[in-house]
Image 1 (cartoon, rainbow, N blue to C red):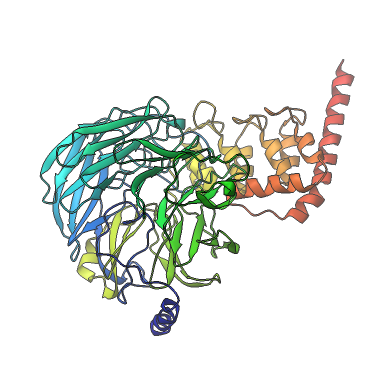
Image 2: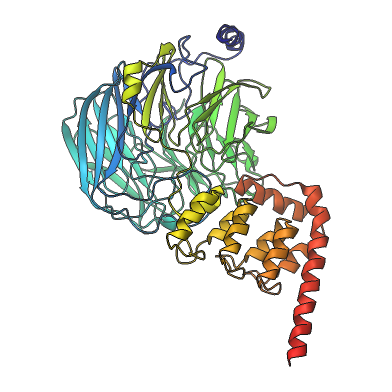
Amino acid sequence: MLRVIGFAACLILSTIPVVRGVDHWTRFRGEDGNSVGRDNVNLPTRWSTTDNVRWAIDLPGWGWSCPIVWGEKVFLTSVVSDEQNTAPSKGLYLGQGVRDPGKGIHHWLVYCFDLNTGQEIWKREAHTGAPQIPRHPKSTYAAETATTDGERLYVLFGDVGLYCYDLNGELIWSREIEPKKTFMDYGAAASPVVHDGQVFVVYDNLEQSWIASFDAKTGKELWKKDRNETHSWATPLVWQNEQRTEIVVPGKKSNRSYSLTGDLLWEFDGQMSNLVIPSPMNAHGMCYIASGYVGDAHRPTFAIKPGASGNITPEGDYTDSEFIEWYQSTASSYNPSQTVYGDYLYTLYDQGFLTCHDARTGEQVYGKKRFSPSGSFTASPFAYNGYLFCLSEDGLTYVIKAGEDFEIVARNELDELCIACPAVVGDKLLIRTASKLYCLSEGSQLDPAMAAKLKPRRSSTPINDIWAAATAGDNASIKRFLDAGISVNAKQGKRGATPLRNAILHNHLESARLLIQRGADASLGGPDGNTPLHLAAFFGDASLVKLLLTKGANPETKNSNGETALDIVSKDWDPQVEATYQGVGRSLNREFDLRRLQEVRPQIASLLKENALQARDKNDASR
């Protein structure tokens, strides 16, 4: 089978340009921010936890920074806590972060490993102390990826400091970074970039956002500019185009480009989505900028030509701008960045879809194709040897043939939580999982002695609290938390979700029934005012609606929009209602049977009307 795939790769490569470059991986998503590796016949197409594994090592603590490589050295960061804290877990989080900073003393660590053996060359502790800020529920305190220019290593821990080491691990300089409050307490995440003696850092927050340049040799601040932004976490791109070198930084209010001396070169209001996470990249002489928060209707992708100056926001359509080569209004994902491979731009959606557009024109090649089995994604796609690779949060990598047709040719399982983007160097693929670093290469087999020393893998769905248990539909864990005294109506944060709400949102009806049987309050609303009855009615579950009504749910309770459950299901079925279901489905990674919903909504409306009338009759009789 491997020979067949290899033969197919040769055929595909005849139509895809070979990526030129050196065998280094110096920053987040590689040299140009595009995650395309240099082709090598010994890069693997298939792997497991032992097959095609050259080496694997345990990583202490938690971190989603990506491995970077210079020569024979691999650099990585992690944060180890002296006390147990809530572990990161997969999935979409549309609410608050972990509201309190991590407990106990934490150790911010920098590692250097041998690329060929995985042996630790050196380890340094950059900072020790108690965290000052909270974080996103799926993130860690080592979210930023380091960068190198081949002389020095630049390590950013976004809310702590910027540290510079030589490649032998000697600290050259450091700069403290004052932690700021971020939107929804998600913390920092943008990685640093280095170019021509300058290290560039972006820190967007709710208090005082900025972009700054530091001298690579001394750490001296060369310049610093305020940014009128609060909702962005994208890593900047040093864009070396045919006219000049510039620093491109997306933003919710404005996409901007700066000169190497900090002057604003151009900007435009892209009506970006509410949270700007994908990082810009460079291909075909253009810069690609995107953002795609799942709850927004406008999730744009822009292809920008070199040479712009000033405000290039057009009065009409975005393509009316001389410097916007093309624009798509709904062609961006939420967390993963896009990848341009050959003539195609690929967009990997968090909920397990892939789309393909012509990278030069923006024309759609194919629309949303769902992965099977389905998965959720945070890591960005990467590519080499004629294939696109998409690594799910469950550790399953889907291998897709590059080109006009969507075809999955392999599925490779590491069976562990994966959030970080891999690195591709020479004949080696480096993948960081929740507990390990794997080095994969064609024809390798993990040494049994090394395998025997490895610690157990971390599940992609760690159940650390009752809300996660309800989200995962883990009834055994729900019972365990309830038996331990956790309130069945506990709220996740001051105004957050209850376990019952999470169970209904994620279509775990048996878990919802369990929680109701254990005393869940059927009338308790969430942050949006929607009660379990609102949600059950919207999702078209008549049996759950009946159960909630018998437990005292009030069909006349209104949400924050002033709607009752009856109001929600009484609306005439039209394209707007259908679009609402599609939007909610995207945000929850759920597919709805629209025909069934159209049929069942009137039935639920009748049920709610009947219950409301009975309640009124009882009230009248009691007067």
